[in-house]
Image 1 (cartoon, rainbow, N blue to C red):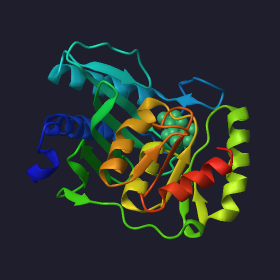
Image 2: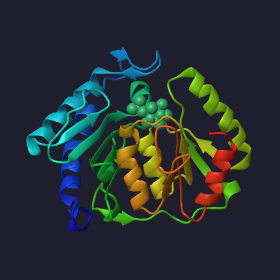
Image 3: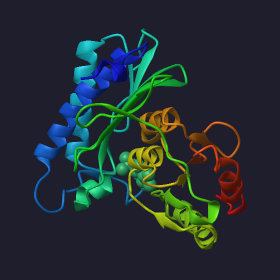
Image 4: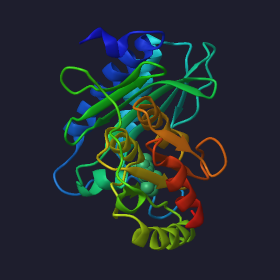
Length: 270
Ligand code: LIP
């Protein structure tokens, strides 16, 4: 592995995120049955699923992180929050894009981030279905990590009217209705919309320029942490409705188009 990606203050945390993330991705790939994956339970709504494999992936990640760094905290989508003493907390989505995973839509990811206080300092995302992987450290840049690490930056975007925008919808029908209304307003003013189905992959697509902009309401910390750092380290600007991106809203774009795009998003009532 070229050292650059793992150099610097937070390189060690990224290296652990990559090793653990790859093991979890292998478990998810190996355990996925042919056809539809059965739902083990539902969470925030009748359409918010969890599978036994989401749980197994998180258990594996928790165990491997605890073995390597026993004093760290852990915030994962599927389990209890663990408060640590080291000042480092892991923020983990064991399968981001669970509905895609259930249906076999090839866009679901393991997403692992490390943060100190509110600051994410290392992040790794791997698309389990096709093996593409991304990583970043705070101040260290963004890298493709499938194969030889390759540093990348976000390409210059097209004008506002030609933006390809990634977005997503929550599990609450009322929230979805409001999100749908905002997208109806946005759609005629941009090139098109993409609903990939996993925020971590949306943010990596934004970072790499396979979409030009992103907007979503209702993200959880584990949906945003790793992908958000990869996008900002690649050169993107992420914002909330007011100030930092949060549960209320996450929007992102290249700095050249961000002010115009953020204004459009606000005008569409997101
Ligand atoms: C998903 C997010 C996605 C959002 C979905 C869901 P999950 O996370 O990544 O952006 O649109 O509603 O929240 O539930 O697959 O971990």
